[in-house]
Structure formats: C-alpha cells, structure tokens
Length: 445
Image (tube, rainbow, N blue to C red):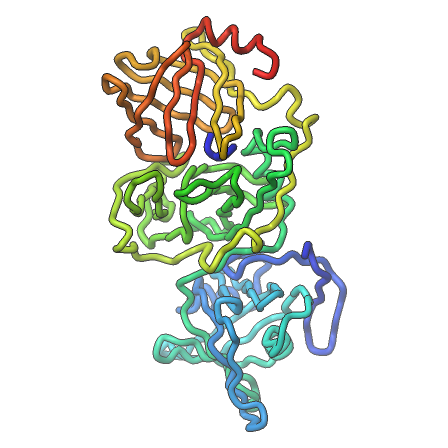
C-alpha cells in the first residue's frame, strides 16, 4: 500500500598476466558472492580465517619511495568480499571486479600464502589517484597475507608493496542499474504506472547480502521520490533470487530509514534485521525483524539512540540524485489498473486509496472481516500491501501493515468511506458494501 505511494553496464576485461579478453560483466556489490566458479584453492579458502569476510581498503604501501603510501579518498568505495567458495568480489571506486582467491594459512592461521586468480572487472574511468587500476593491475602479484591488529595485509611478490585492508562493517548502497531488479520492483509496485505518477518519477538504490547462508545474495532495494517516501523515510523492499533466475519479493517494509542493520543472530536460519522507523510524530526507534519461515516479521522496538550491533547495509550519504532512475510501467501493462485479489464470499470488492502531496490515488481493493468501527478485525487488501485493523472503540484502532508492528490510528467514517492518517498520508477505503458497489461503477473509480 505505502509502497505504491507507499552508467548502465560497462565493457569488461579479464585481467591476467598480459592478457585482455573482452567479456561481459555486471557491476556487483563487494558483498556479492558469485556463482560457484571455484578457485583452485577453494578448499583451503573455506577453512581459512579469511572465508566470508568483508574488507575496505585503507592504503597501499609501496616500497618505492617515489610512490610512498597511497590512500583512497573514500575507503567505503574500495571494498572486498572473500567468499567461502573461493570467489572474491570487489568494489573499486566506480568499477567492480570478480574472480577467485586461495589461501594456505600457516600453523597459527594468522599468516600464510595468498593468491588471486584472474579478475574480471568493469573499466570505467574513475577519478585520480585511480587506485582501482592499481588493485586490478597488481592483484595477480599478491603472494602472502598477514592478519595483524585486526587488519589484513596482502603483500606483493618481490617486495612490490602491501595492500592494507580493514574490516568492513558498513556496506554502501549500489548505484549500478540492474534491469532484473527494476522488473521486480515494477511487479511489486503495480500502481507505479505512467498515468498514475505522471512526471513524478522515482529512483532506487540497492545492496546485496546473503541472509540465509545459502551462498546466494538477497537484495535490499530502497525506493526514492515523493511517490515512495514520507517524513518517516521511504519504502524498503527485500528480494531473493537474481537476474538470471528472477527475483521474488520477500518483504515490503513500508517506512524505513537507512542503513539496514544485519545482526549476527539468526532465526529459522536467516539473520535478524533492524530497521529504523520515525516520523508522523512518533519517536525514532529500531524495529527488530525475525524470519518466520516465509518472510520477516516485526518484533520488539528499541530506542534509536542505542543502535543495534551488526553490519550496516545501504550505508552512506544518500540523496535523490544519487539514485538510479526508475521508469514506470506503461498503462497497457496495467491493463484496467492495479487490483487486489478477488474477495472471499464473506468479503467484497471496493475502492481504496491514498492522498500524497494533495494528489489522490485510487485502486481496486478488497475488504474482509468485521465492518469498520465495530468489534473485531478488518483486513484491507490493496494491490501491493495488506492492512489489518483492530477496532478499539470510538474512533480508535490499530493498523498493521504487512511485515510491521501494529500502529495506533484515529479514523473517521462518513458516507460509507473510512479514512485514517498514517505517517503524513491519508488513506481511505469505501467500507460499506453498497457504497463500494456504486463507487466501482463510477468512472475513474
């Protein structure tokens, strides 16, 4: 419900010793495991202390006095993920690289032999000092590793220099367009069509993380723009799958602020999540979400001044201009417009909607359960979300959006239409079955 209003790819080369072969590569986050194309040392890698670790580049220490020590201006743009299957993924400023790695630790496990296999990477021209070129060009000469003071030192052969990496606890958002994700976003947001949004185009950013340990990443998508955002943040989507096999929506978190915190704790094999909620006059708080076997469900809240422990995804200074443009669907794709599932025999079809920035959006919805304002609960099914109302007497109720904890609301009913305010938006639905039938017959309803 709230989701509804609720560069492209670069040429890549295989970088090997004096060999450049054109291939096709897509930018991926530095936290993204690739398919199981295992390196020759994958068995050693899986047993090393380095497996499934994330790093950010601190500096390159050259043995050449003329070069000295070179540091990235923004270390968050230079990241590396060493996967347990022997694959490596890197974000190198404006470029991405993937390949293989292998390690043979010594007796204490804190040092030993280390090598990268060939790296496939994009070759966009990044700003100086172009550390991306140094990493991709010299990775083939790395021969050893040392874990010291919490940092990973990767040394080149013949005292050629040392790459120094620090543990990465904040993983920045991605801004490389992903057409597969865009198709999944549009499928999950049936109301985002040209006739509905007009010129009010949205944007998105995303990030990838393996939440259930199956070796395949899930994808967080954060939607930007007035049609997806309110004072409390913007819509956050979670998908499984990939561009090749297709994406499946797991959760729609209607109001969220970034970053998303992924806890080390797990429930039903999936890492617990924390997301910040605020706005609408409510105090900011973190909501813990646990996996219930099908999707994430909200649990307790904690004060926002005590951030939970965990890795922070979609981190960084985000603005609308940094997002990837999201073109809405054509009206032919929407056919007669977005609609909720057909009602049961006890329910009825109706008209519902939301007012955003003074503009009213109307959809075809279904109502199940008790009449609005009476005893019991009512389930309102929008085309892309579900809200469950628990009527508390008078004009008080709670509204529970899918995947969220109940929120107190104040509602009013007049002329067969029930309205309530959530965040900075006014939602409504025709709650009387006779009035609903008339509303559906009215042009544009």
